[in-house]
Length: 155
Length: 155
DNA sequence: GATCTTTACTTCGATCGCCGAGATATCAGG
DNA sequence: CCTGATATCTCGGCGATCGAAGTAAAGATC
Image 1 (cartoon, chains in turn red, purple, green, blue):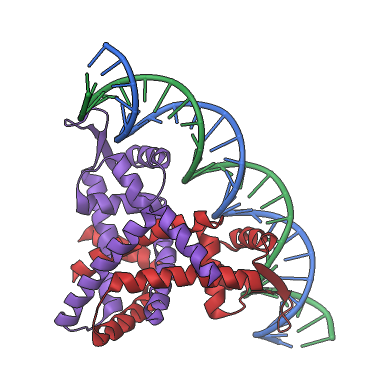
Image 2 (tube, chains in turn purple, brown, yellow, orange):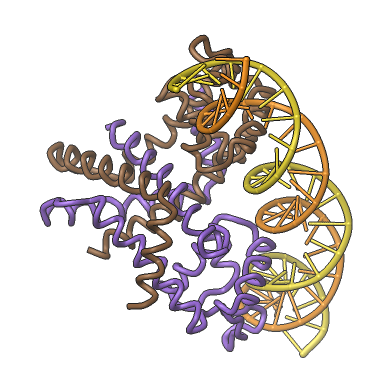
């Protein structure tokens, strides 16, 4: 099934360039746009949750949130459940921007998919769902990945 | 069809974290690993071609190639067809590393996909092919994207 | 309920990567 | 030739990221 992996790799590479272009247009970095759209779909989140999501350190997220807050896209509110942490939420302006960013992406994805029949599209959705979960859990298990890289070296 | 876009967005976010983890394990940056695997599948390429692929400026690619060359993963050979340019190729060591990086990704993708029937898988491949082409051409057309972002603002 | 560990965020200092502009060399066309 | 376009590299400067340390609060243990 290595064909799928190659094609998916190409999609990832194309998406990198795509997100890069879009981020520059709105004057933000790629991680910042990722945060905005994630907040749009997931609702208020803590900085540490965002750090795990974006795959950078909490220190970087602090800086990114500073920039986003300065630009008026997000606000930091205190978390009533846990006073150690902070809840980051979109402002109206940030919600508008995030909505436009996602709408743009969505249109291009629909165009890129073209005229696939509903059954295939549904299957595609199921596969993507599994895939994101798999990659997500793998990304956190550094030891397992290191072991697998080792093993493939010995084969 | 916005469901697919959401799922794909999740795959992209997960892939970011995944590639980040893998790159750190082998002591390289994410762009460098992207270059390695691309060279593995596409064969020798010029720095400018790699810059378009990775979505950074040629100046950055020069630095990335310096690092990769220093680590013994790639070599710069003169291009017999065009003496202005350079052909970047994998060394045996680089080819081995690139192969392991892709094999790791491939296994996780296969695991993530699970048991889809062959017909669906083939269709999925076709869709991904279209999608990467679409995103790729869009990423280069800054003006069109800017216009679309504007338009969605007025709607 | 006092202590200890863990978790959450931030700040700081330092490093690293990326970009833009300029320089050099080569190609292609008139 | 001469001009304009292309390909790469160098350099300077800015900005982002990281690791480590600091503060604060929640949770666990006895």
